[in-house]
Length: 632
Image (cartoon, rainbow, N blue to C red; front, top):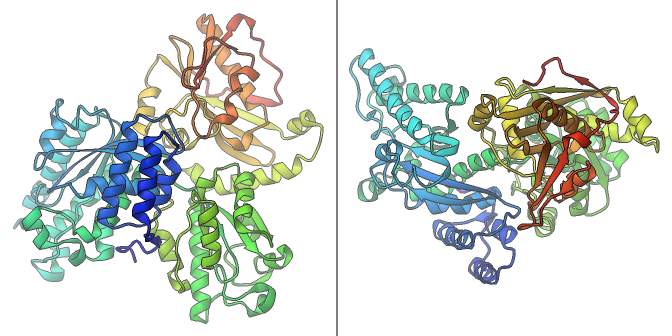
């Protein structure tokens, strides 16, 4: 399953003609990014991946304006030859809605590329660098006969990687990705390899543990290739003949999987991973049809293989919710009937309180998915749709190719495995706020229901809102970076900053930084806004907000804080900029609404706005402002 990317559809028979049509569209300047994304949604072989990557390269060479896909410039250095991996990554990244240009280091010169400021990798203006070394390159390819010698070998390998990262991180704006080391297939002591500290297997395990600790401290971004290799089998991962003849560190058959794993990390860095799992009901969350079989007749729970399989699906969905993935329901059913198992079946793990949006009717599912995305205030490209019915899956793919729709097969016992294998929810961090996100979306739906009044001022006052303003800090750094990279709609410039760049902004006295949290009578909304302002020019570099708080006058509250800081610093004007993207049209008139005046003509659609500090008067706001953690 994992090796074959079985959650994807088979490649279309007319792949080449579709690719040719995209190339023709590129030549005439037509929009092609969604078409490129759609081409990547199938199980492509190495030849097809290479052809698609060449088309991406052609497209990027036209210097296209920002489109719906995120962009990454990636460097790769590592063990052996990377000729197969680089184009496979560029093509696979499209699947995860990232346009990627790839720069590869020279064969056998990973260390030199990393530490030489003039190397092709260091001078290429990269966002990320992927370092994929193996046990041979790291000096862990032979047994050490004492524990001390083994520890020294592991530390030497770690020191080598640290030196490489120290060189690369000055040139890679968004960080360095390090692959865990895949052990060789052949044991020396048999099962005792796991015990003997000097065995190659034990030393690699020790190094990988140190890499995980390093990643937990945010020093690197980890790609766990060792786990993937264990999942598909070391015998399949390592092709001895290919290593000796072509220096391929991974079997060519597994390059598509390896490339997809790298692409998932790129998506996590760029914020294009999915946010919500939308679930069908009949024969997806339980066996049978609730309208026909009733609560007592559906297959669910302990005591039968089918019942336990559907229980496992629900358990995975609940676990995803606990780590911050929003759950929704999209079912062809009478709503009252569809809710019965949630309300009355003793073995249901999922309950109504776990579902942020519940849609059950007899309409088509593409239309209902649009409604779910609108209700959650997220894009369709944030949704994963799980449905046992191939007809429903095909209809959604045809109408909404930006929605992720995994092939899950006919065996419900394998549904959780296929969903997990697809890597839709790749994460770089896990903070306390992630645990609360699903509850926040559900509470937001309750707020919307409560807002059934024409007295908007009264409604806002009744929410008892408290807005907390503070500067960036280490405690919330991961969440700040996550918002910067995931927020698209209410984001004036869509500039992206990785976690290490956020850390630099914290320490930069020339930058005014704000993180804003909002609490109301329904609960904690969490961090809802991030702002970065240049104190020298008083230009707003970044202003983004969660769409969950639209209409609550938070933009007025943010502007009041910016203007107060500008006035205190003696600034004459505050400047704002709207850089249009494929998704932020909703804020095109943001500054106009706040009283700014446009000061120049459009350049590629970009507009610049200015507000005189002397002309600004802070408004009365329907919220309390908490400045206990005052901005510096």
